[in-house]
Image 1: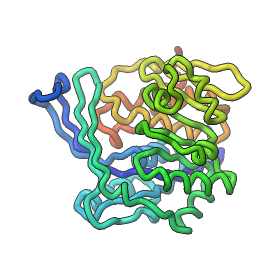
Image 2: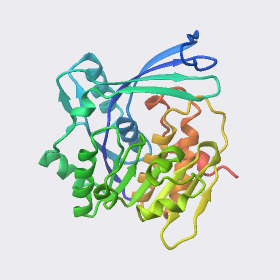
Image 3: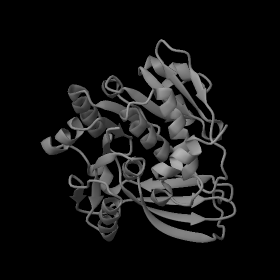
Length: 299
């Protein structure tokens, strides 16, 4: 089996993660139990997740000139991701303040920092996109940058997987270049204005889509085919912060390896389940052997 070549266009943040028995309500202070500082950002997470799932991966994004940026580059590179195109922008890196409750739920505040300055893709960056089998992108960097990358991918026959997160308007030009859309219920509603129990509404925008439902699994929809529900893999949940990133990356890797998309969604569900068993974002992203173990577990 040929190794999938993935290009990820997206954000890199330093995640400051605190845990407590319950999340604070507005105006409330609670005592926490643990604190960790970890590399994150949806782009960096998905790049690391793709490598751990068995792909080779180049990451296109921006970090700041601060100490967080130095640490981010070192950690992402150490994970096996090609950071040769990772830009350094004067100023602060992106930072995510993550609060995790006792049931694994989370609340996240992100300050974009250098991610906002990731604009005007160079010819070298566009070439990296064109040389990949699959482009994976999210919406934590300027949408114009994501659109330029998607159009370059489309022109070269590179598959485009868009994880439309966080929820925000997506231009028609970008949607027209997307081969596979991955969204949760909030993001699906923002795009379609329809209820989450209508995943087929996403096919008005793209030819294929996956609607993730957390512990309720996911729907895969494709034009001209019946919708398929993929159940979640049952595990004990510790932290769901990076589950969506693990899912999206594994889905792209499996599709790039030539798996049918329904099977790829099942494999991605196993990746998401493996991820939630540990605290943190990038450190919780599962390796291929863990994904395969849960994927082969009897239902």
